[in-house]
Length: 309
Ligand SMILES: NC(=O)c1ccc[n+]([C@@H]2O[C@H](COP(=O)([O-])OP(=O)(O)OC[C@H]3O[C@@H](n4cnc5c(N)ncnc54)[C@H](OP(=O)(O)O)[C@@H]3O)[C@@H](O)[C@H]2O)c1
Image 1 (cartoon, rainbow, N blue to C red):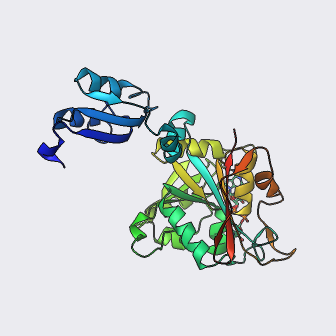
Image 2 (tube, protein in one colour):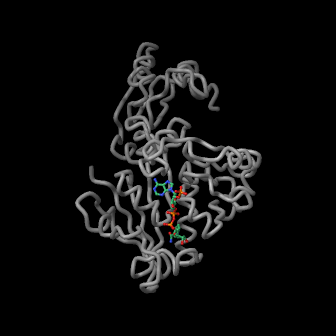
Image 3 (cartoon, rainbow, N blue to C red):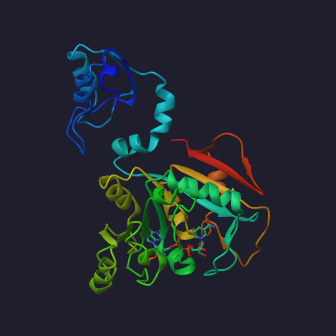
């Protein structure tokens, strides 16, 4: 875009420019052609097709290269992308809206608004910043959610919506399926899914992706995250429900957790946040560390945790 103004200039890029043909031609070729005399980068690209090759190509073309500037900050900003290349699976942020007594719904099957508007807007922003939103199929059956970003002016930032549904019980009449033509819906299932259910969902524009199954016939979540990474998904926002949260925790697949806590209690009839697994396995465990202070969002509180290992 800079045209002739790029000649002799310095270009600043977060990630080492690529030297291979992906969805676009190599960025190093574009930089060399532009006539810049210096390139400053923060991180090496861990993609084996690049991995230092971008920096070398610039040097070979006589361009001065300064590497590693603000590397820690960049590593944080790109953590999901880096995770995808290093661990070969999508990065998971588990988000749960909880009552003061750690419940996520008033009763099984009863849609319940837990947090207020400010917290809801924050969740919608988190959706827009993710590559995908994921829920277990029982959340679709209970709440019939849209799972879109509905912040003013940001509707087009709604990411792919994903349902983990071992036997394809997602109703064809659900809001998710009905809107699959506008915002993508992928259903992750197993070989136990019925072909007629699959055909009905695919006819509505849903992508059905078969994953390995666990011994009890559920979608193998590790395999699911690998399949998502292969399809270009780096960051998944897992929005529950309780069994999905528990399964992700037990498979050690939660990289970050965001707990939005409301001031009111629900009581013993409520749905426990992680289906019997205490939330202290996140809040007070050696496996997670709280990031920064808790933040007040209207009358609710947001606390963010990151996996330590
Ligand atoms: N407050 C919040 O933040 C929040 C967010 C979301 C939901 N909710 C509430 O949570 C409740 C639903 O939670 P839930 O626990 O009943 O259901 P869920 O976690 O949404 O879905 C559980 C279902 O996911 C499917 N699944 C696929 N792969 C799985 C795996 N590897 N492990 C476990 N399950 C797997 C299973 O059904 P199949 O065997 O048929 O595949 C399982 O029964 C609703 O009341 C909803 O309102 C609250």
